[in-house]
Length: 420
Image (cartoon, rainbow, N blue to C red; front, side, top):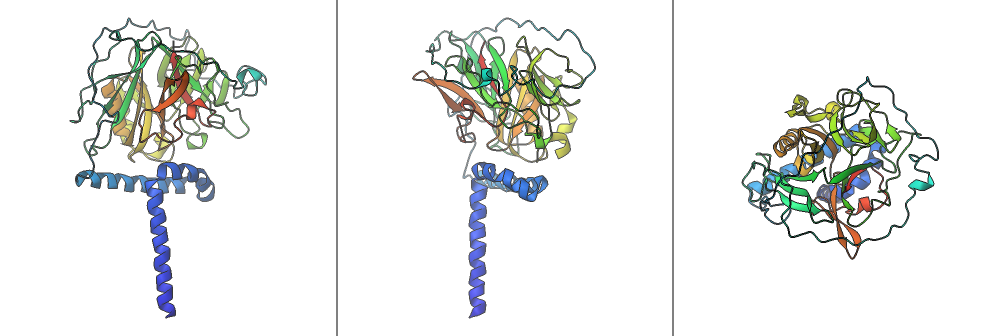
């Protein structure tokens, strides 16, 4: 009788563990976000990385089974098929490169107290902002166009650019499309957003907590008041890895949260508002006239060529917790050869080689990895309703956690885009 009782107790325990495991597996986007940091402190970074790797592999296998059995099919992530948009290209942007190129030198890691770069300075504290009216997009065809991308798969609308964001004059300043670049995973869809840098400005914000080092300077996590305006703020998207996942350098508005490191992929925003993506120590140096810069892992695409290390798939080369072969929600950013078009990439079930293929196909001449994993890779367009800013997720299903995160103070660094 006692043995039989113990038997049922063990069955009950296993059932609870199984149910809990299935719940965590199905809700890892939200559960993992809450559990990850406490588990890292308890079990260590590598142990949590192994847990995440197992979870992502199981999730990917389930997705493959669903598609093989006909229980799911690939769908346009934006809900409607794209139509080609006619028009004429805008004039070329005059590029003003840095005046000098010198060998890398150490960067100051802190700002003077009370300076414009000091998060405690009164000038950097968030305040209420006035609401302004916006102008509805014009029905006149847009003047800026991009060539459609040759599709990888057979999903209707793939590679066709849709008008996505407008400036107050009614001009299209951002398009979006999607790609189906993984032949082994038809459910892997990469969303691509392309910004016209002749009509928009890119900005970078250091998060309230990340990236930073113990005792070092940190950011304030807010979009400045003068940019947080309906009709001016167009979109916002995630930055790079947190400090413990690579220690990649970051600077914004005179505050260097982490020093720059040679050989790493870097997005730089100059004080004249031009944007470049390249390698620190080869394309960028510490004496540049920068407004901000952010590093993250290695270059994915450099001068039109895919980095061969994309295919080696090691954690040491691609940072964070996962190797390049593990499929998860990944994001990246790229720029055209003429530095006029900024691309944002994001999609679930992405490996590094597949992300690289999507970048090159889209027209990214230089490209780099941003943050990965559910809840971290996040993009929102900023719509206006009743003269208020409303955040709209690029991926309604994959990016549904804290959709309006960038309209408030945020712990991690991020980029945002405004009308020029």
